[in-house]
Length: 292
Image (cartoon, rainbow, N blue to C red; front, side, top):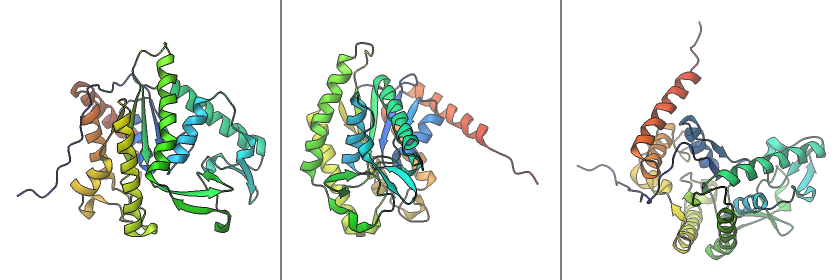
């Protein structure tokens, strides 16, 4: 008796190697994969701006990294004794504005350097819901009053219209860089983490919007690919034992299974064995015995 619905991601004609740097951008599921890839031995930079849940904020961060301009001071705000960035996590905040800007510019420079040398970018979309303030999408509301924001769900066209020129720019940027002979690839995935604050139906509408947008981008750009992390958890691992206690996030076991399926899809068998060995050694080295 078959007790699962198998999901088989499509393997591309190329594979990842340990000597290829990676850049991961997007939701907290990107962090889950980034930790495991670093433990496996990859030079993986994950969410240098902090967690970015919606497609427009991820696009804005990449657009800024592709430019030569510093982080703009007008994208900072003062609230509750601290200077914050609308595009960054609160760990970049500071009581001193110059310090906040310095942290933001450092993350921007790190992103540029990794983008320059990374043949593969992994992008994880978490939600189609976005917050607008004064006509601009913000990545982090920093606990400002809700009446300062307008919340809306993006359409498929809105996502595609932002990402099409960005992907074209990224392709030209990579192809023009003769120091990198590797063809660029963008791996899209949709986070399987459920946003039940939007209700179960609202979460499905959001995820469906993301899936349709990604499908259109993958169809149009040959260097873009899709990895079925959403389907792996929602279909193959649908049992609640694969969820954390909040019943929304994947458990560590589920994240490990999805990560291993990622290796099976994008990494050669020989490299995959080395990745598994590296991660086992990394976890063993990080273990701290309990001293009575």
